[in-house]
Length: 116
Length: 144
Image 1 (cartoon, each protein chain N blue to C red):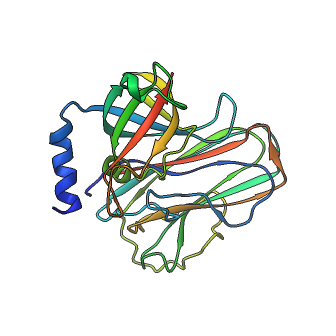
Image 2: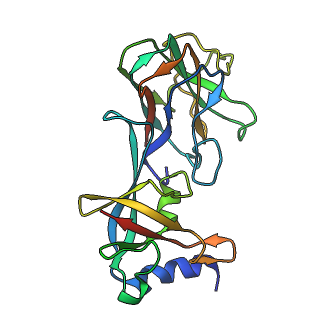
């Protein structure tokens, strides 16, 4: 199975995707610019046994398809401090994992820990 | 083109003077936005949110026709010490039958070179003076 096959299968596999925005601000202050990239993501809560370490109750896990961000030419990697906009609500990205959902060196999806 | 839409040609928080700094970052770590093959037109917005300080900022929007070996200025916008937004539209279908001599970071202030759209774009800036208090530049391109 090639990474392309896996990317195609991923969309069908996870099923319950929704569009989200990954937002990056630059600078400080009220007038600081930001750039949004739309991506398909699966938005989930954490299971009780996953709430350890820096993961708090109420945090959400977003599985974001990387190819959507690449198509929008969003400057990867997604970093702590970037934002995710889910159903109009801006969430802080507390951690971004770009290792777990790789096939070899090919990034398939990002796992984002979001709070807010 | 394959992927029309809004692209981020760069956001930059200005502070000390810079010369010829490229502020564009692509998804693959490249210092440009690419995969723009087939683009017929580009609407470009260059916006400075001014805080304080500084003297002069020149923003050069550049494209390349030889896969990044040579960069060609297609627009230059100049800002001083006030917030401003400048918008231009460039067309890839504008005939250019008199050869233009390309420049890299040396275009005449507030001018544009229409009719030259390569497969990649970037933004280079040069500033004088020290800008402060959240002075930020943002450049966006609507490609279609």
